[in-house]
Image (cartoon, rainbow, N blue to C red; front, side, top):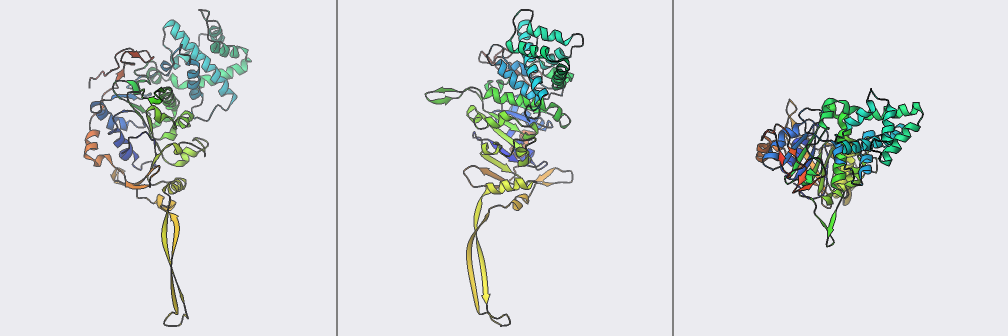
Length: 474
């Protein structure tokens, strides 16, 4: 059990027991705020009830493809007049047009990026002026309006009704007007392709307004548990939206630090645990790699789970050979790996040991009944404490005929500055306390947070006292 500020990285192949031995016990014992990537909704079912009723957490289930999801509008996080709205929109559009984290590689990506930055700013300023909702579906609707010539939109962005326009908005519209018709059409179609997800009416409804804002996670009177649910058949489709949410969480909650008498001042009410299962499936999040080194100072602790080290070091879908994820996680845990590269990494982490090697030599005639001389030599030699082959042969969890784990497997724990620990997986259902906590029924619906804290508005649409409400009154 570890509650310090250091980050945790786990290497666990699929179906190795990481959920029942690491994720669920953590969520049934960590009482402060948390953000959880819940791939099947299982973690909500087994942990949300205890976290709400006994850990005094407000619980939120953000399942964008479900009608029962709580709502969150990314554009509600961008505050007009803050001075950072252009940077905030640019960061948002980076994620929209680069859903895999590979960078803006083509001309069409770069030009679509510039167009969407101007268009989203236009929608935000229009919302501020006309008191209409600013949403990503509204942005798509402007680009796809069948009853309006697209050049009318560019002219509106340059010369709005009130006569005032943002220079970035005007510049992006002027760029479109100056392009040859064929190129402008290609830029437009590229931009619309990145907004196709938000034409799904369920997704559009779930991001039309906000039941919470990101600041709620660490500044509400009660801790907040946010479950981000994406079922396997929707995981790839929803990835851009989930990347936006996680990116904004890191940027918004690790942006300011106050000091007093030469010491940092705690500016949050609750620490935040980022429990990110299948972390590499989110694609490359550059902000995450860059921020791991300092977000602990803002009260944020990361718990990252991946199948093997190749997922992190992949140049195509990961962070490359020189990734900084492993070096910033002071605690690493591992089950029996399936890839030799991961086994070699674990063997190096375990270190070396000294063994005594005995060598016996004899001399004399072979046909003689007795040897002439016997020499016994003891020699110290170095070997890996755990070889890659031994790593791959760690006993795994025992399963019954239906695939359910019945007996824990072995694991290794590495803590920076300490010798490696050889241990056993702690299965939650074999612990009386955890088993009882997992049986608490989850709430029928998410809480709805107000967006203010002791009278200080968070900058989102809601106002209130910083408490949560639930329509089911559980």
